[in-house]
Length: 103
Image 1 (cartoon, rainbow, N blue to C red):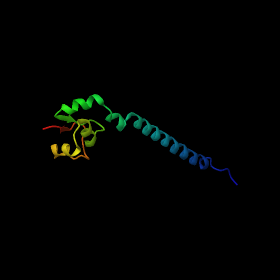
Image 2: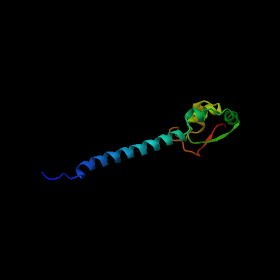
Image 3: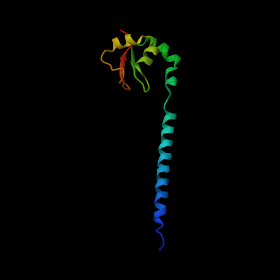
């Protein structure tokens, strides 16, 4: 019997190392991305903003906002906010979009 080719043993080891490195890189990237994104409770708890919104006539959508969160901050019901903004899709709010809060 002749000598066996070392590539026969090194190829699976290289494959496992590549898969492990890819997993670690992706996992670290996702973990870092989640820690930099503000949690919904952080964006909702803004006591000074709610007073300003109760008098404001318009609101500019910020990242993480939803129509129900905006309604709660402004002191309006969700149905009132929807009736004031009939052309706005509540499931597709875009950052920078301007919403009417009062008539």
